[in-house]
Structure formats: structure tokens, C-alpha cells
Length: 219
Ligand SMILES: CC(C)(COP(=O)(O)OP(=O)(O)OC[C@H]1O[C@@H](n2cnc3c(N)ncnc32)[C@H](O)[C@@H]1OP(=O)(O)O)[C@@H](O)C(=O)NCCC(=O)NCCS
Image (cartoon, rainbow, N blue to C red):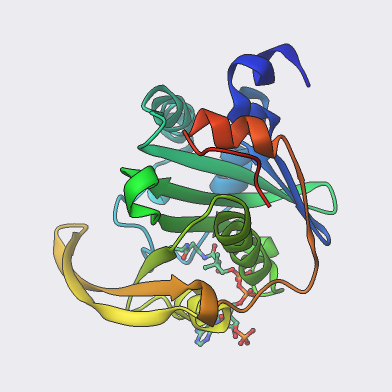
């Protein structure tokens, strides 16, 4: 374990699942993620994100992404935290799989969010990285449920949620680029979860569980 991971256990987490490796976004990953995002995540006429960060032009996108990840880390509290994992597919950085929660020791729930560079979409990676995160949450962080949300005009994200076993949980009315958009809320429980086709290989689990106030070693 490196020195930084000893004081910030999120940096010691490594989650492998078949061809995927997930690890907390480090500063060295940020320029790679900036290039990936600048290469395009969606059609110019689409907006999958409530905060439309993906259309910020490159000179401003780079510091905006860096400060986003620094802010997420700085706001990390043992019971209310978010974890942004850089996703590598056969060693190539392809995108980010995130999870955010509040009052986790009591609620045991939180929401996933993700994106892939355009050239890596439509090959099953989005499904596998969501399954990986959910398996980590249910099997190793004692989650009771996992939620997601996608605008109703985002068929790829909704298809991933349905394949992974999430059930619809109502629509919410959201402001998106100053216009009303409907967001499909989704909830996944362990009994409905369609697990990934590969076992998880996890490093740094016990230190991370202690970091977020969970007792005892994980499964
Ligand atoms: C959402 C995202 C992470 C999914 O990852 P992915 O690797 O493309 O997803 P997969 O290849 O695993 O699966 C995509 C599914 O969507 C389906 N799909 C894609 N476009 C579709 C469309 N226009 N209509 C219907 N289904 C569609 C695919 O057919 C596939 O389902 P199938 O395997 O049953 O055929 C990725 O597309 C992405 O980054 N999109 C832009 C950012 C985003 O929307 N993030 C989520 C915000 S809520």
C-alpha cells in the first residue's frame, strides 16, 4: 500500500471484475479523464446530466473536472461520502463509475452515476461497471438498496438499469438547461440484482470499511 492510501483508504481500493479494474480517481487520472470527456460523451443535441458539465469547452472543462474531483474528496465524511472510480477496460481508461450517499450507516443506500467516452459505449462496459459497483455495495459494504436516475430520453442508461435489475420508482420533474425534463427514478434491491458474470477481486476493503465506519471485515 502506498503512503497516500495509508492516510486516505479510498486510494487503496482496487476492484477487479473480469476485464475491468476500478480505482478511486487520483490526480494523475484527471488529465486522462479530461481528454476522454473532451473527445465526446454524447451527441451535441443530448444532455444526460442534470449539471451540463459535458458541454463545457475544453479550456474550462479541465479545471472544472479537477476541482469537481477535489471537492468530492474534500467533502468526504465517514457517513456521507461519494466515491468516483476511474474505470479501466483491459488497462485503458474508459470512464467513471460513481456512488454517492448520505447517512450511510443508517440508510445503507445511495445513488450510482456513470459515464463512458463515446468510443467505449455500446459494448457492454456500462452494464459491467454498474454491476461491479452494485456487487461491491451489496456484498462488501452491506448496502440494503442502490438507486439510480436517468432522464426519460436516455435509453442507454435506462437499459443498463433494467438489465441490472433496478425497478422503476417514479418520475421526478427536474430543471435541465433551464427547461423541464422528467427523470426516471430507479431502485435496486439485492434479491433483484443481476450479478456480474465474473467474481470481484478487491484490495483495500477492510481499511475502506473502517474509513466509512463499518464494523468488521467485509465479505
Ligand atoms: C449510459 C452508459 C454509461 C451505458 O454504457 P454502455 O457501455 O453504452 O452500455 P451497454 O453497452 O452496457 O448497454 C447499453 C444498452 O442500451 C441500449 N441502448 C443504447 N442506445 C439505445 C437506444 N437509442 N434505444 C434503446 N436502447 C438503447 C443498448 O441496446 C444496450 O442494451 P442491450 O445490451 O440490451 O442491447 C453510456 O452509454 C454513457 O456513458 N452514456 C452517456 C452518459 C450517460 O448517459 N450517463 C448516465 C447518466 S444517467
